[in-house]
Length: 319
Length: 192
Image (tube, rainbow over all chains, first blue to last red; front, side, top):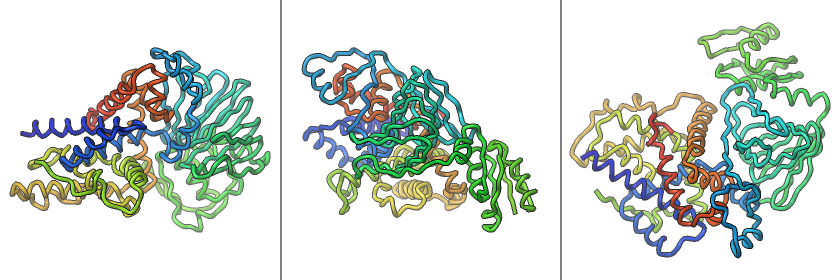
């Protein structure tokens, strides 16, 4: 009996997946819509199976829906996949108009790079170096070039030579060559810390340049046309502070303890807790290894003359 | 066994919001706040003797019920998911005149309340979803190409068909096939 139930729910899940694929197409026939409605009405579990299939399908999106919709207008032109390249006649003409002609003919693999709470990872690619921060995620073309990198979340450091790099994130397209910058994406909040060179930022045909040294930040709102955002100059002494994360270091220059603790939480499973807000607001100066929270805690203990307790191997309490 | 839906035409709860916005928002909410906890709920269901239902039935019904909630009213999707599954278990059993002893479904045992702090919970949920994205890149070649173009590069079915030199029907078929292969319950670990 249970096997029958199980195969029924499996069948339902398969049907739900088929409906997701049908409804994902831009144009859906009236007949399909009617069949879909009828199927939903058959059993409440059909609705549940469909919602679940949609949830799985949506969870694969690399960026939030609204931004994805906006970015769709400027779909990348160079992602080539050469399965039976049949671009002829009217189809090719239509593709030209929509900017969709594949310029590479080799099949491309895409690699998902993601990091946990760990040291930043370095990836050497022809033409440059990408440093992925902890808790970050991006899609890379496997053929080892620096174009069509899709930044999903977190932070990446980009050091390019004369070969151009092209990175997409949150509906924005970034172009740069011979530049050194950090790119952070947190939901719709995008920021660029340009240390050297120029980064061209474009969206929906509008563009602006971010020339280093400067910090540029913007909210990628699909309702707003063009590239807005604010840029401010990056002082020379702040460059080392900003860039330190690439070497898993933190440079504190009269910074509150709470900021430092938040940074350490990003790189280690060890949790550091500060007992009082007063102590959290205490300021510190120095350079520390982000991968050694215990060493940092002991230094804080000495500097602030506070108590340090470790109830277990992964918890440090400063009080 | 057939259970009729009581909602409107497309099975979604009535709302003053535009249908497209409502659905999109709900799908995203289910993907971000509910789906990451499915493995935990499923494992909990496997630990109990279900009456007149399979864990899949319960999970599917949960999604249908959770859809009626407004995302901004839900503070803890995990707790809601567990409560919904528990209630459905009890309902199915009652229909068959079976009563669970309260201690069998002790909420303390359920681990509804995830004790980890919010940032850790968010990170864990994100990790679950990342794993699914990683799985997507391990699909068979054609299927993976279709998914990469659709989900990473946001190309339409028409654009994908043109790029790959296949029909739109084939694109559809590959999307459905990929979803079958990605289905989280097919994972050996029973996790996403």
